[in-house]
Amino acid sequence: MSTPTLIHLWCLFAVYLLQLTVGYQIAKNAAVKLAWVCLLIAFGFIVFVFNVEQPLLKMLAIIITTFTAMKIVVVAESYRDKPFKLNFFQWLMFAAGWVGMRPHAFETVRAGNMLSGGWLLVKRGIARVVFGLLLLALAHFTAILPVNATLLFIVNSGIMLVGLSLILHFGFLSISAGLWRFLGADTYLLFRQPANSKSLTEFWGKRWNLAFIEMLSIAVLRPLKTRIGNTAAILLSFLLSGLLHEVAITLPVNAGFGMPIAYFIIQGFAVVAEKQMKKQNVAILNNWFVAKLWLLFWLLAPISLLFPKQFIEEIIQPLANLNL
Image (cartoon, rainbow, N blue to C red; front, side, top):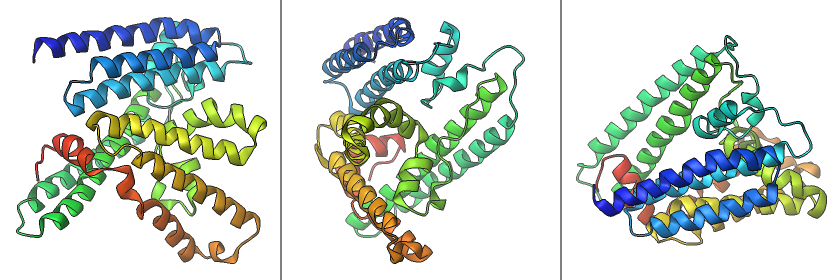
């Protein structure tokens, strides 16, 4: 590892420590505006420092910094009108050890307060990690097949994305939730059987990545919907989701700018349209098969906008230890 990279990692570590220590005081005092300012400062500094680093390392540094900063925003917003109940140790566990965005889950952490359901989550997580590893092995096998290069790239990209998602989203996060329950934190699955979704509203609002849902609900949707209306707040939440995905996907590879935002803007308008159709009891969405087709079309038809080719080549393939 080069000396400049070591210096950059020390900078990341210093920013992270500041976020955990100073961030606790900001959150405790419910200083929401200051929390947003600190997010912008920390994000700008890390992007500047890691600008010359490899895409994967740059992505991890940006995600760690942005995610921790959003923890401060969420906790400050959550306790704006409520008594603050997290001690510093509980705050550290929530901010540094858990992906979810509901700090109240860590108010129950105390000696001897083991919660039920932990082993089930751990076992589910291990099973999904194994399945994900098998899919990555399949990607390595199909990579040597004598087929069209474009077709191979598309198929293997899908296999790698699903495999890594099973390992990270459905595997490690489930294991983490189970382990925290052993210590008394009321943690839970963050990906709740998204394949069972019957609508876009259910998929994006109740099943896919509850950490993101909680973050946007607490930091954006809830504070704004009384000021600008529910529809505008929903669209703004999807816009912010697009911006955060730009930060994690296009910024590290310096390519594909605007594509993730476009994907989530499409999702936002589709969700609003779906809500209007349901309000008017449009018959086609009452049919299970048609509703599933509607859901899959909007999720998958524009999926290439969410994952630009450069992101697959420079981030996903190295993560899967595969070069096509």
